[in-house]
Image 1: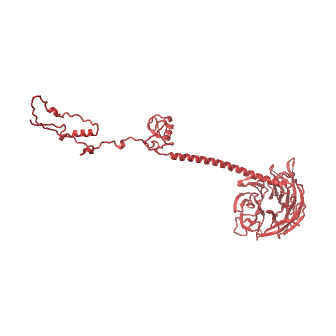
Image 2: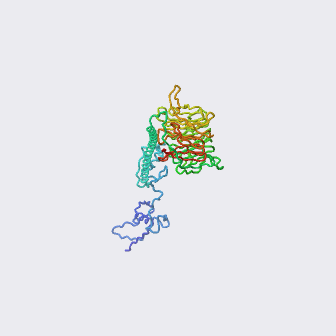
Image 3: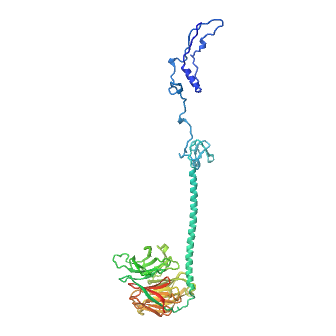
Length: 569
């Protein structure tokens, strides 16, 4: 019996099915109508008969010439090189890592942490809250939303900025700022307390000084006790001006230095030709010239609370405060009239007074120097030649209130601080050149110029008293003694009265005697104590203290002589 040979050709579609089956990919192959089953071509074997089989060629369902060509990316010549198709990266769905409103990265905590609405869209917390406060709609899909719909999200796949350290630093910075503000408040409170304490200390110091003055004397009688034996001895001299232009003299409160007004001999000083020369009390060493004014300086005074500040007034209508230590101008003001006199208020050291040529007296405050605080004497009249301040003393029954003595060319006025009124001191109708008030004995000195009826100058010492009358407060002047001075020298020479440092119940008067010497007199009796040679008229005189030693300076047109005061044997 011949063997039956079945020839089966390879089908490419079958290979594809086998490969897909191996990779476990469910691929469905459509049925082919022209496929031939091999078993259908072979008839069933009949029992008891011999069947001869002839070779049968099975037709492939996909002829070779009609076999479809597969795409090259899926199939290659090697079955093992066939790759499974995958999704492209841009087709994948990933959570955004920045806010769609502000395009800033989300943070893990803080105001820009990740939140969502009920519609599912995610935003930064602070951004979506601002949007909902204005529109109440989702910024992405416009669906209705409200602040209560905000939910905090904790996304594991989201790359969020870790700002925990930043938030901690912010918290620490806020705490530091709060602590600094609290400390600033405490510092301001302490500064206010310190200012209050300083004012209180200054006020108590003034009260203590007044009590000290009051304690050393009882109620003052009208008369002054006769001075103890006192004399003066020249200890130093200093030439200040070769041309003889010295005018007025002033000493600091501590007596360590003084100034003299003069003009500079050089023609280079055209704008500020008149100024000051500073000198030290010990050794009489003078410093350089300080130009301050364009015209003659008429008065100079040191501040009572600062021994470096000096007040100057001039015929050029200017008021200036100068620091002799730093050599700088501190304040400056102008008037509409030439200024003849000035003085400070020792009770309120920030206040000062200036007397004008037309008789008006104005008050200034160094803290606001650009304006006049008060006009003390508003009535125009003869020029003000001298100003002196009387300290208040409640133990002085006749003259308890403090105020300002104003000496003009024709009369003497008193400005009372209590009622801010001005009254006339009845001391005659002579031409006055200088007034001074001695606070130790509570007596006043009124110097009068020589005139036709009296060829000699006169220096009157007396006590000012106050009393209430029908028209208001009035003053009287009780003359204690009258001292004859020198003949008229053509200049407004200044005299001096000071409390006897060796007898507090007595006072001493110093004035020009005859144009070549100065006379020292007892203020209680008018008795002459000593003649001091000067070789020129005495234009000004000042008493000062250095330590426990007492001195007196006499100024002439050319220079200065210093006399030491002592008790005579």
